Structures are given as structure tokens and as C-alpha cells.
Image 1 (cartoon, rainbow, N blue to C red):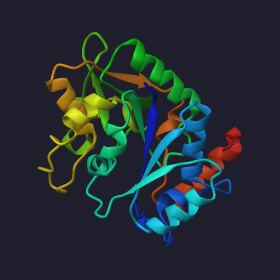
Image 2: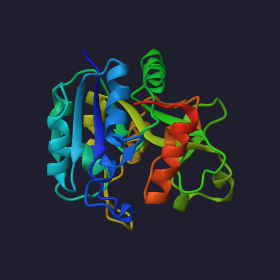
Image 3: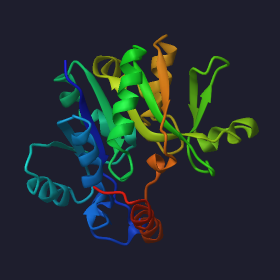
Length: 249
């Protein structure tokens, strides 16, 4: 049994005003995707699959520069995060341990957070563990809703949240640990019955909960875990944070 990783890197990032995939946008001179891979390697996770989409040849070129093996799969249509993971189904079938699924444009997901969230995931014998963070401004993020005992009850997207839920400052980072076999048991049951007609990975959490499985949430110590960039201004902000806090890839 070994742990593996899937990195979602299919996004175009139209607002980036770039001709390359968003995950290849640089923070301190290195692609955001390189930061995520570095964090995984430092956490002892070497078996990595990248889901590529827009300008896949750019991702292939990036992979060719690495001095270690990384698998990749192609998501021809970008139909949501759940759909992206579906593209890596064969990769999942080859593993019997746990898989961490991360966004390729979240450069401050650290090896420490990956390791500690895995420890909680395995010690609690959970089917899945969401990596969350407490932020000052949760606008736009999915909220982590817990029950009276502190257990994860639901992930509620901003557009679906009522007034009370919108007050919650604990948000979904977009990072998840799953038991590979249990993820496969619900992956094909994710539906696209929403306004965007997309398949969302958090729906896997909902399905596991409805199956009576234990699902947890690990709160990262640093809120920077959730940060990504959708435009040049946000990318520059990530660079400023990295310089100010001494982050390195």
C-alpha cells in the first residue's frame, strides 16, 4: 500500500492573459505546478499524476524537464474537478492506498500540511479528509460545516450557502485525501445536475457521507494554503507573499 497524488492542472486561466496553462504561471520564477510537486516530493509522495488540459503540450514540455517520473492524463473537455479526477481513474485503480488531490495553482500547499493531514486521515480511519483553512475573508470559497462534535457535516458552496453558513470562516482549500478504492466507489456516481453542467469533486464527499463513511477535515495551520491566482494582479500578490514570508519552492 502506497500513497499517491493527483494534481489538477487543466485550467486555461483566460484572465491571466497568457498563452500557457495557468499552473505554469511563475511564483518567484518557478511555475506554480513546480511548487505543488516540490511539496509532494518533500512529503514523501513520489507517485504523481498530472491532469492536463489547455495547451497540454506545455505541461508535457514541463514534465520532460523533471529528473524524475511523473505520469499525466489528458482532460479533453474541462467539465469540473470531479471530471478531471475521472480522467485519472486508471491511475487510481493501480493504487490501494490513499491519494491526495491538489490544485496545481495553489503554490503554498506545504509538505507539512500534506503530511499532517495524511496523519489525521489515517489515524481517524477516514474515507476522505478535506484540507481546510481559516481565512479572514471567506468570500467565494466553499464553507466547511461541522456538527456539534466538530465532525465534518458538509461542504457548502458560496452560491448555495444561507446567511448563517456564509458567516463561517473555515473554507475548503481544494485539497483532499481519499482512500483510493472508496473514491473509485463514488466517482462514477457524481452527477452534473447543476447550472454549469460540471462534475464537482466535493460531491464525492457528499456521496461518501451518504454511504455512512467517515469523512474528516484537517485545518491547515496557515491560511495561505488556500491561495491561488486567477489574474495577473493575484499572481503578483502571490509573488509578494512568497518574498515577504521567505517561501521557497
